[in-house]
Image (cartoon, rainbow, N blue to C red):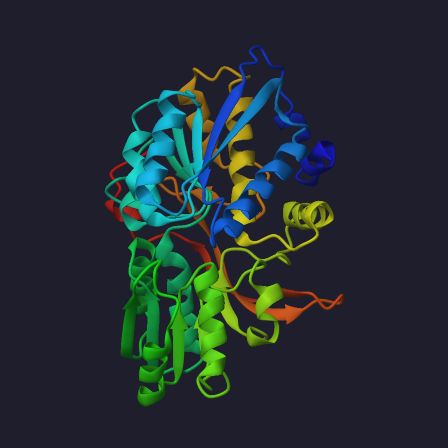
Length: 390
């Protein structure tokens, strides 16, 4: 499996190093493993385990020790678990992080303290801009980018009047900032709902009915997204006002949403049908191992492990050579699900973003397919505020 993966990018000779040192690579992975949002975190963990399978459970000649921590969806808990990983477990890498507010609470416990920090999902503006750091990397995106792409799509579709809804926390604010940055029409309504407490959207849906916009855009990850789609249909809006989203419909929610999400459009950096060699192997083996399509959360987590592997191999297992590992990660020369990309000066990917549509595959399973490319080699708008250069 490992050789097949490396051969897909013809990187075998480059990635199979003559290892001089073989320290155990200790990786801490902070995510949400319990509660309603636990499905996302467990999907991420599954992808990490698949990546390790593909690597033969080793990085070069080095053993790998994974330590998973549950942030329970709370910033203070996430920070405590992060501090444990750094101070007690003495990990070399701290990664994971679904939620922007958890990442922001945890950042200062890692950067400048020894380990590298790699976000596998959350991408709030500050860490891409003024708070960028030489030991902080992303294998996902900066929050605004995905919804900036949606703003462009709405323009292309001729939407004039748009109603926006999102949860009132760091990522929700970033997603709204992204779509409003590029959308050229009128924002006729905006609701920032309580998060994570609010799961009843009846009052906001009544406002949408009264305004009667051309379209509605929402950002509601996890169980909040499933509740919103169900209530949107129950309110009689599904066939009246087109609904567009980001990070709301994914491979975890689709088996439950089914026809409620059929045909809906969203933007993202990746989809299971992206025609890259690594995506083909990743999706095939993920479905074989777990019996479901992987989410983009899983794809990003898979890339995290491959990025770390590239760093460990580059220094022949000498984990004290942080400069060597950093240089290797900056090259982004690892087998990524997104294909070839490069890192910006702020260590966030410069990459493509796609319009995706919910469909049924040949077996009757709901998934998404790419409709078109919206952005090519897109860099986030906060990179200009990052003073780091290399």
